[in-house]
Image (tube, rainbow, N blue to C red):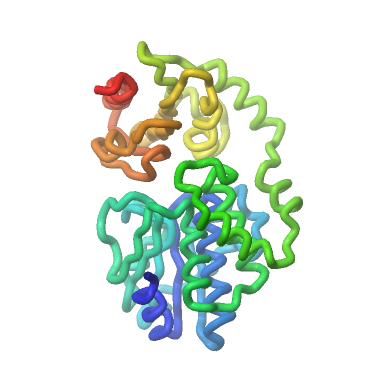
Length: 312
């Protein structure tokens, strides 16, 4: 399955690893994990990780990004991880590379690189990287096992989401054979600052329901600025406050920004990705998003979600 990626790695002495902006545990885990898999199994190769800062996942080992000059790309392989679209890639210099490749588990949106392995059947990109290591018989260093497991846990919703399979647990078990402290890992993954707890409480009070039971929150640009918190904390993190509401199968978080209204869509039973695709977005069947131009367009998206909830 991964022959084209492995062949590309073998043919290049310098490999530069990219992933999506505002990284989550899966993006960073697959990036750092692949770096250490290559270093351990192909001695002599130079591997860099590039992109914006790790943010709340900076506790992961080796999560500080490398400073890489443009000249490093001349004869290099650039690998894009956990990213469905060009606009989402952190550090656009991947286009300078001699060859490009991609490993991703999102629904296919567009061809980006020379060699691509896309499989939405995996719960995480970390799961794909682990499967590649297993398929190739690679030695897995402890640091790679830890970050890859972290990505599998976070992107599977603690092994709750639909695309969790027997393969997921088999690969997770392979990683758990390595000596890293899962209690310490979970403590970092799920520790929530008091300020964020209070913010969640405020957002719970903002939840509204459509006529057909779609839950949503809308935050204006003025409201966001008044919060004085990172955008990602409002747009991506606050969508989860609507999860597990009895009778709610679809929910959406709309956050105004300078570039438009960022919509995060989630569902327990219904495939909401067609709505995201309709508005130029992407992602997974039950966890996806898009950026629309205005509040009016965001409300049209909400109407589409309401029709979806009605089975129309």
